Image 1: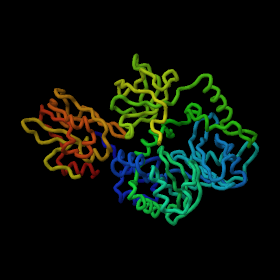
Image 2: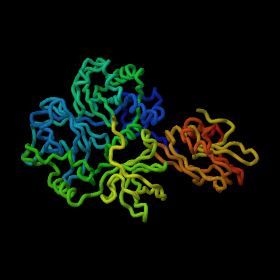
Image 3: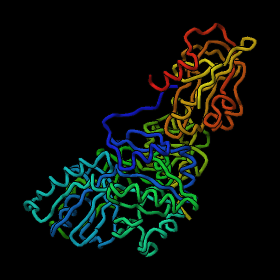
Image 4: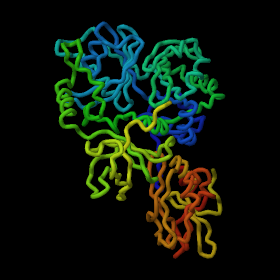
Length: 386
Length: 126
């Protein structure tokens, strides 16, 4: 055994730090934040989200607010999506790419008002995204002085309530019409007596909500949700189960499935790239290279992101080679792997050569520290809620 | 969970029981199991295998990682814990009891293992 426990003196702490420690959480350094990894068994936490509900602290996520008459035009230029077309009160999954079409981050953008958007970036990329948005205010047609980019990373704590019981638990804490809130929509209202942006979004494959609240209100909202959820099987959940939940749901993680070396088309997420934009004369950062990537995806498809399910019990990890079972030729690479609590066996996402990408392809193995373990190729996701 | 006084410990977080007829039991400590998280797979040396103190002799897979298992002593494996192979969660729920890993017939008496108090101090970083 090598000792996996670690800590950092310089990491950011969330507004719920003391709460996590009182609950006995195992903490981990994640993208410069000290975050709860798990409170008890991560497997139990995972299964609680699938069957009842889980409560997460996701305050490490990076919020950036864009306001002003040119807010939408700036985002159309800076991101791959068509954000001027996003309705007020709705949210969209999108990406920010570099000039080469490489993915800088994947994002959720909320349109909070006609001239107000909130961009939510991954913790590890939030500074990159903030810097890029500011730099991209200098569009080819001149500086966009009609858009303001505001760093709101310290203005919000983020709590997620995820699972089939989430809506029932929150119903008792707000007068807001939760049932009328569609998937990928978000509106400001009151939860547990506190102002919150209530969003029907998540990263678990379950129904659920994300609550953006002021840091000083985080403990009160957390405690209220826990109390309301106690009888419904809600448990506090750490980042460990968040990772296995998103993996089962086939959702990509930046740094694993997504990177600057890949375009959205390489990652099977070409649908997020909107070439038919009406603003900025259709220009946006990365457009030329993304058009080429789109064409390549049609004519000469790159490796494809697939699911792998183990027949044995050894767990594939990020970076392990995917090989042809016969001669051991490397045909791909694992990007994420874990024991799946729902399926009861190891699963992985991997980029594989197109000839091996069809579901049911025979003869695919993962090189697990020198031993070739047979794997079944399946279509993503591994899990879809009923 | 406190570290039982009658056991001895390695700095790689394994424990070793007092030998009976020259045979000791090996497991990992509660501290190690807690740090690993839910153990989902164990690969253990087979009966008859020779293990060497300080060298790897198996592996433990948890949700997030795989860790090498180091033998705290040298000798010949006499038995592995089939219960823990079938139900690796025993490592988490009973690391010092039902979650033991293998038994080994000592070829030499180890001299560099820690007492319970020494290991407790070591594991807490003091």
